[in-house]
Image (cartoon, rainbow, N blue to C red):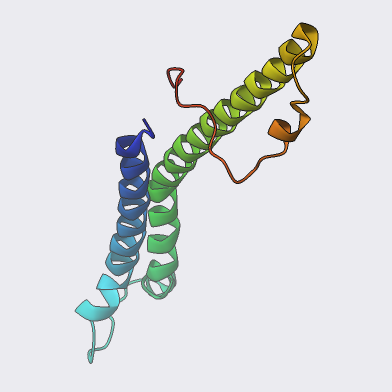
Length: 128
C-alpha cells in the first residue's frame, strides 16, 4: 500500500494554501479597485498609506494563513518518504540476512544477490 490517499491530501493542502494566499492578496487589492478612477478620501495621512500598502498586508495575511497548509502538507510528504525509505532499508536488511544465513549453511555464493538492483524487493512479507 503506498498511502495514495495521504499523498492526495498533501497535494490538496498545498492547493488550499496557494488559494488562501491568492485570496488574501486579492482582498488586499480591493481598496485599490474600490477607489479606481476617484480621489481617495482620506482624513489623515496614515489612511492614504494604509490604502497604498493594503496589497502588502493582504500578502502577509495570506502567507500566514497559508503557512499552516504548506507545513502540514510537507510534513505528510516527509513522513511518507521516510516510511518508504525505512521499508527499503528493511528489504535490504532481509536480503543481507539471507546472504549471511546462506553462508552459514554452506550454500553457494549468494553475494551476487546483494547487488541486483534491477530486481524488485521481496513481496512475500507484509508492508509496513
